[in-house]
View 1: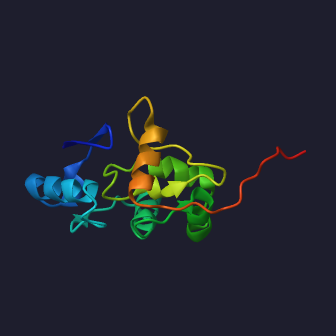
View 2 (view 1 turned 90 degrees about the vertical axis):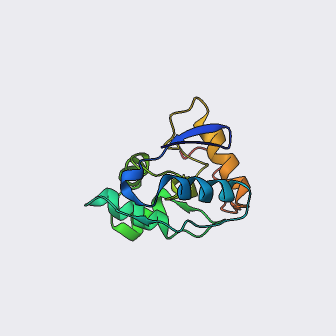
Length: 141
C-alpha cells in the first residue's frame, strides 16, 4: 500500500499487518493530523534479528528516540547491524524506525526518497521528539 505523508510516499507492506487498507489509511491520516500516537494493528514480525529489531522499535514510545547503539546493546548486537535491520522495516511509521537515530545525529531512514533524512526529521518534529543527548563536536585523535 502506498501512503503519502510528511512530503513523501511510503510503501507499506500490508501483508505483515492484520488490518484492512481502509482502516490503516484512516489510522495513518489520524497520526499525521496529530490525533493518534500509536496504531491498532497486529504486526507479523519476521523471524530472526530483523524481527527482534522491529519489536524493539515498536517499543519506543511516541515522542522519544533511541540510538542504534541503544538497541544494539539491548539485543547484544552491533549498531551497524541494527541500522541495517531498521532499513529492512517493511512497515515504516507503523513500526517506528524513524525513532531510531545515530549517536551523533539523525542517521539514515528506510525510505526511497531523495531527502529521506529531512522526512525523518519532519516526523520526529511532528511527534515532538526531543534529542538532548550531548554531541561530539570534535573528531577523536
